Length: 154
Image (cartoon, rainbow, N blue to C red; front, side, top):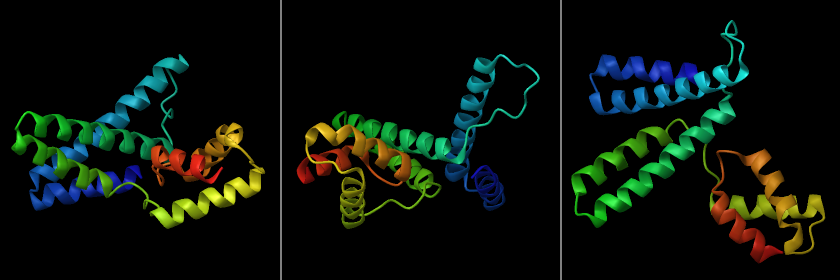
């Protein structure tokens, strides 16, 4: 995923697409910050290989999108439509690097399969089902919506 981001950054530089380039640089900076946080927590000053995984990068990207959606809501309430538009453009760029999101039918099917596998029978088993879903579908599923669907299916 890092290689894909670096290649996209170089392509944006060549195309002189400043908006795309800025967003990709924000992504890479957030990844580097997370890498440094892990490195500082490990306490091993010589370890240069402390890097977050692709799954963690996908989670970071999902968080960035969530933050921008909240910003869009705030900007629209304040009547700052140009800033809301900028945030929406950043969401479009960030989304390109996330794994394909499951649609509603695929999400429902995945939930039914996990419920069957885990033998979940009531809402008390919801935590077990959600843990398996998070493990298997990190970055591919909206877990807020999935939680609602799990409740309905149990």
